[in-house]
Structure formats: structure tokens, C-alpha cells
Image (cartoon, rainbow, N blue to C red; front, side):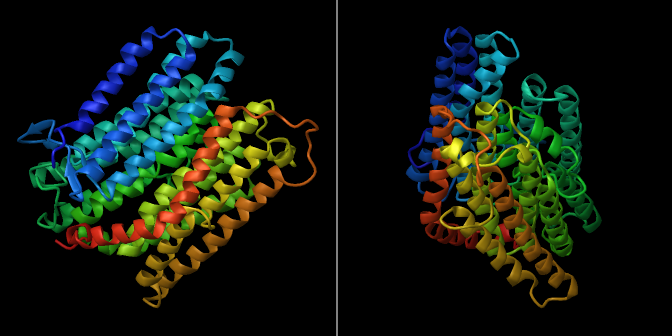
Amino acid sequence: MAGLPPHLILITILLTVAGQMAIGSILKKTKQVMGLVVAFFVAMSLSIILEMFISRTGTTLDGAFLSSSYLGEFNFIVDYVSGPIAMTILLVSLAISIYAYSYMEKRIKDEGRELLSEMKLFYLLYYIFAISMFASVLSTNLVEFYLFLEVGLISSFVLINNYGYGERRKIAILYLVWTHIGAVLFLVGALAFGYIYGSFNVFDASGRILSASSLPVNISRLVFILMLIGMLVKAAAFGFHLWLPYAHAEAPTPISALLSPLLIGIGPYVIFRFLVPLFPAPFESARVWLAIWGTLTIIYGGLNALFEKDFKRFLAYSSISQMGYLITAVAAGNIYGFIGLIMHYIAHAFGKATLFGSAGSIIYHEDELRDMRKMGGLLKTLPLTGNTALIGFFTITGMPPTIGFWSELFIVRGAVDAFFLKGSIENTVLILLFIGFSLSISYAFYAYKNIFQGPPKFEEKVKEDPLIVGSLITLAIISMVLFVIGPAFANTLAGYLNSLNSLMGGA
């Protein structure tokens, strides 16, 4: 651990969750509740920074906290792959936790509920949801990953059920059923893998990723398919997407700003992190068809976004489309695609959190307005919201000066290297990908024009809530800062991935 105490991340998680339950229950002011959550997110961020930059080993294991002859070891791994994803989850969750204060205070008051107790419950569930995502991407064991994922699904289900819009209880059940279909498929595959392979570990004691190439071919293929489909359901890929527009549109906006930017992207991340190295042969045989699936997801989500009139549902369809980019990046199966995947997870996280936050700002300041046909000229009414939304659209469409420019550049390079002039199906992937890019730009700036440009439909300039716009400005600035450091990050990531031949499906 290079001088670091063992179990640093685990201890920080346990202390902050326990502190949220114990200290949060006795606080008397709602701002104290928010402040506690912010402090805990900062503590978690420091634990990751210590693991990544003080140890300087490239790969750091936090220390096994559960060991079994059958289950294997539960541990947390921090490296140049999981570390940036985990930090993204913490930073977005931190910014949105501040954003959520004003938004949820108004929402709870509008529903006539007791403010302090509801804010305590909201922030407790919010913190558990965010930390479960954080822990899942650091997991080294298939069962460990599933358990943390399950905690995230249940806590987000309760948040939608308690604080959502519309027919929130029906939508929460729809969300729970669909996401559990994906989780159970993954679990069945994982259990079959562990039973036959003898362990659920994905990494060995040194942090080197393992391979299941010794499994019988038919068994390996079946397990791969089960786990792959499970993660595609999680990612709301085309055909498995029905739940997402309802859940993400009708969730309370601060939770939408975690569900779309953070949670669903874990699906493609796990395909890359676990399935590619564990099942190199099945992955290689499925690569082209997975790329077709990814590009169809881009186009399907983009077409629906182009014609959607509800701002939050528009963003939900956009998230489906963006998951297609992540799936296509994985399917490229080369280092450029993998770098594009990691960078686009980060880009989509900051860009989409900014956009959902912008939608929530309009809802907050303009009397629950969500219909884009009734908007227009809001840049004059809500200038800070409008300008940060523009940065959000730049980020998800790959425009400079945001990290989205680099992420989409690497995805294109990976796809071209993998599929150009390799056959008619492979060429179809590239054609669909470039159609998808055109759709993304079209729906993004068509929506921006309809919402923020043109003559204002609201006469008075609104005083924007400082916590809401402050959070949006922070997210937008991070997107632009990451544009500056993007090439250096990509070089570091390339060197690290090149050193992990097994991660590329090699050994």
C-alpha cells in the first residue's frame, strides 16, 4: 500500500455511512444535513486521491475485507481505469448534493410534507445510492459488484417512489423490475462462472486481471451472454430501454442527474472491465454484432430525442443514445476504443448532469415547466442556466472546449481501426456511427435553440438560485478543465492499458 493504511476506502465508506445515519438523525437544520453529505463526499474523494497519487503504484488494492474459499475475496482496486470513474461519481454526486438542497426543499414544501425529516431521509438515501455506485466500480469480485449494485438499485427505487413525479409508484416499480432483470441475468452468469471456475474473483492478489479462457467453450459463451445481456439492460441498450424514459424523466431531478450520467454507464464499463478480459474468445466473436447494437442504440435514442417535447424525457432519450457510444467503444476492442469509453463515461457524466441540472433549474424557477414547446428565450430569463446548458450540450456532442471532444475522437479512431474496410457488416457499423453523430448534434442544438434562443416568452428576468447555478457552473468548468488535461490523461491511460495485456483479452 506504499505507506497507506489498509482498508482506507472501506473504512471511509463505513464511517461516512454510519455518520450519515447517526449524526444526520440529530441535526436540527436542513442546511446542516446538506453540509454533512458534502463533507462526507469530500472525505471519500480524499481517500481516492490518496490511493491514486500517494501510492504511485498504478494499481492499488485497498485490502481484502471478506475472504471465503468459495466466494473469493472482496476488495477495492484503484488504478488508472477505476480511479477516474470513481472520482467522476464522487465529483458529480458532490455537485448535485449541493444543487439538490434548494430543489428538494421546494419540492417537499410544495407537497406539504415535513421538511426536516424528509430532507434527512432524502440525503441519507442519496448518499447510499452514490456510494454504492462508487463501490461497485472499484469491486474486484463479481458477487461483490452485484451486491453493491443491488444497494444502488434499491436506494434509487425508494428515491423515485418517494420523491418522483407523475405516477411515481408505478414508474418506480417499472424501474425496479427492469433493472433487476438485468442484475439477475448478470448474477446467474456470475454464479455459473464461480461454480465452474472455482472463484468469483476478477483480479489476483497483485491486482492483475484474470482470464476464464480455461472454461469449456460452450459454458464460457453462455456465461458471457448472460452477463452481457444483464449489463446491456442496465445500460438501456436498444430493445432493453423501455424503462429508462419513464424512470429518468419522472425521478426527482437531482436523482435523474445521477441515474443518467452515472448509473447506466456502469453497464458498458463492466463489459469492458470484467467481460472483455474474462471471456476473450466469446467477446471477439460478438464484437461486430455488439457494435451494430451500439450504433442502433445511438440512432434510436437520437431519433426519439429529436421529436421529444418534454425536456427531461428528451434528456432521457439522449442518455440512451449516449450509451450507444459507450457500447460501440467497447465493441471496437482496441486501445483507442477503451480510452474513448473511459473518457466518454466522464464526459457524459459531467455533460448530462449539467443538462439535467439545467432542466431542474427551469422547473424550479419557471413553475414546473418541462414542455419545450412553451419555452423560448430562456437565455435572457435564466442566463447562467442557459450558458451552462450550452456547455453541457457541447460536452455530450463532442465539441471543444470540453472533454467530450477527446472522448468522441477516440471512439471514432477506435471504430475506424476496428471496422474500416473489414467487410460489409463492419462498414455498416461506421456508417451507422456517423449517422448517429449527426443525429446527436441535430437533437442537441435544435433543443437548445427551442429552449434558450428566440424572443423570450417570460417577461421578467429571474434571480437564479445560487446553489443551483453554482453547482451547474462547477460541472461546466470541470468539463472544460478536462478538455485541457485530456491529451495527458489519454497518454497516461494508454500506457497503463498497454501494460495490461490481459485487459485487452490477451492472457
